[in-house]
Image 1 (tube, rainbow, N blue to C red):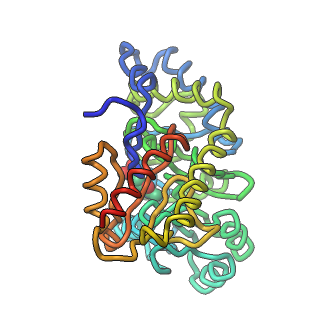
Image 2 (image 1 turned 90 degrees about the vertical axis):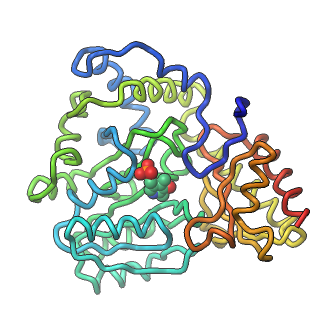
Image 3 (image 1 turned 45 degrees about the horizontal axis):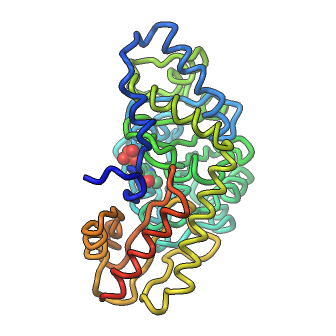
Amino acid sequence: MSTAFGKFFLPGPTEVLPEVLAAQTRPMIGHRGPETEALLAAVSQPLRAMFRTEQPVMIATCSATGFMEAAIRCGVKKKVLCLVNGAFSQRFADIATACGREVQVAKVEPGQTFEADQVAKLVAESGADAVTMVHSESATGALNPVGELSEAIRQVADVMVLVDGVTSVGGSPVESDAWGLDFVLTGSQKALALPPGLAFGVASARLLERARALPGRGIYLDLVVYHEQIRKHQTPYTPGVSLLYALHAQVGRILASGGMEARWKRHDAMRARVERWAIEQGAALGISFLPREGRRSWTVSCLKLAHAEPNGGTIAKRMEARGFTIAPGYGKLKDSTFRIGHMGDHTVDELEVVLDNLAEVLRRG
Ligand SMILES: *Cc1c(COP(=O)(O)O)cnc(C)c1O
């Protein structure tokens, strides 16, 4: 196994810096004691800065999907409109169905996004009391204009806006409060560059108000309880204490390296670097971006292959042989695309090396 940082470019989990990994080896502490409380207090403001919210950021020990389910259980009364443009947005719809909600799916082709006029119309016609969407669809690299969509939805009716921000929060601007989002969630192993195992979420006051009146919220994923506890710098159940150590180390690093805006800027630069590569070499290498310009994720680039060979899986395998991990396409796009996850603590310089290697792999046909 390679130990040098800068080789692992999956769209999650992403590479974790050695010092962040090492923070996990500290001894155990009682999760109800003052030390855990101090730890949760110390990460509270940095997490709010990441979500751009005045609300406390809830922390659960589960993967991001846990908070997707929480969003449905606590945010949907009867009917939900699910905006589906890839595998993760489809997951939101599947969860809602499994939770017994009435589900209306609106679909666009993989790689495409939803637009404000279209969504305003869909919401008005649907009679839904909530809408789900994925900000950065990691399966296709498409970035929904969540701020615009939320504004359009809010003008139509009293409908909850539930957002999977798993590959956007911490990697590109997410304005939870300014955009009027009712629930935004992410997981530790994506743009935050922590090991997997924690979910983070922010609920609006109106979502919490709705949740309090909703039956069937369950126990482990009840946002009302997480919210009440985190306000006191506590968690309802035993948190992954070692992961909290890593989180504490990571938010310290983020603050020391220019804060959230510097982090966004670096991700934007990585996205722009892949774009420039695709423009300059795309024709020669037989690649082009799947999503259109202006709708591309800052954390994961999905590139379409003009030729059948080498396919997405072969490209990932050949990169592996060179010591680099990237991802083939996801689901139906497995062969016809490949994906570079450039999030977390990766840099443009490291990405440059990946692109050079990719060009060689692609040129050899
Ligand atoms: C990775 C990912 C998920 C699922 O996260 P888990 O932590 O595996 O539950 C959900 N949505 C998006 C957009 C993702 O990239």
